[in-house]
Image 1 (cartoon, rainbow over the protein chains, first blue to last red):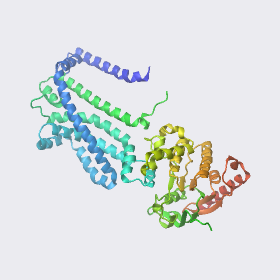
Image 2 (image 1 turned 90 degrees about the vertical axis):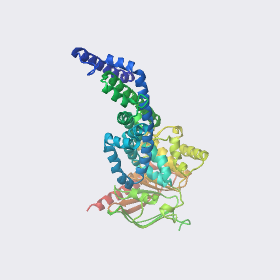
Image 3 (image 1 turned 180 degrees about the vertical axis):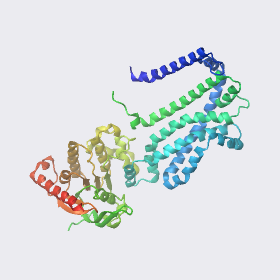
Image 4 (image 1 turned 30 degrees about the vertical axis):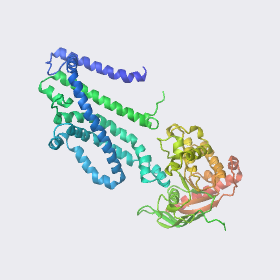
Length: 262
Length: 258
């Protein structure tokens, strides 16, 4: 079989098998819908709630698309700052770690006190959840430049700025994209969690987090499953874009995209 | 006495890293313009350090080093360094790699193009101008590295075992081409190598270094006139001199044993 087809058919096969087993379990054990809805019931709920889920998904997407780019910009700038000297790294890194180690549900009430429920809080939560892998990876990339290349630049009397822009930044790109892929998975999760705790639905549907609160309080388990599906779609969409960007920047020169011999 | 001042002058040069032992000690050496100096010696004798001192990549611990009368970091002479690895920027194609030193100096683009094209033709790799480093063989990458060094029209060329990782045939080819380039451009070269026959073939002076600390064990003058060709390699005088330098090299290892 063509390996290109394998990459599609294998996961689809696994998915169908799991769906079949799931349907069988529902049938055989005759479980209540609010405990475990069958795949068909989930589909039916998704169809019934399609307008609500679409808008909730869109709202969460908006939060993600503000918080995630914000994380990219801030963490890149921070990484360049951190790469400048070991002193800066030693001074700042413990606090960055501390920020990451604090569970987001501890930070959330503080953000709520400061900014209230709504876009600002959810965007900040998305930002906080996704920026750390970017900072760590990009900084690592910026300081891992081949020592000979750095010397080549110094001998050519390159300015500090030229060294950063023409050497360290491109050399750090593979690391940056590694961080970006992790962050692209975390950012939509951050947006949903943020919405769960700090979303504001006044006069609207809210995001996927807020939907989760509503559906679970109503024991609408099939709709909860459908919400999970929308979260996954959102995550896949963002990760695909990030993979494409990585391919665009790296495929010509980086070994991670090297063509394999047939 | 030569009429022009020496291009490189080392006097009682010492080098140690941090608090470590001396890597180089008491180095006195004068290179005249156009000299091709091979530095040879066992591992750890400070050959590469010698180059790095001239390049200004590392400060002296003692003594003095002058390039045309100025300190290494302050010299107006154009220097080029060829590393043991090709040291190319993998995200740039061959042409842009060769242009890097000129780009850093803000040379105008059309001038950059012309110089780069000439350099690529000189090392016979012009047909790969649009390729990326990962598409090239080891020998091709080294040619690009050489082209980049030559694009500056250097007055001083520092080569740190540039062909050490290549197979023997490619290495012989590149040696011959390097000498052909020397006929076109006039530079002074310091060439670090582990290969005695490479040293004898390329240089007019061979410095044999002894380790612990690195010091000059002997200097051998290579009398063969330039241009040299593969014929030179097959002459009896060549074999004889290779034997003599090898003997000197072995003697340094024996002298190093406690």
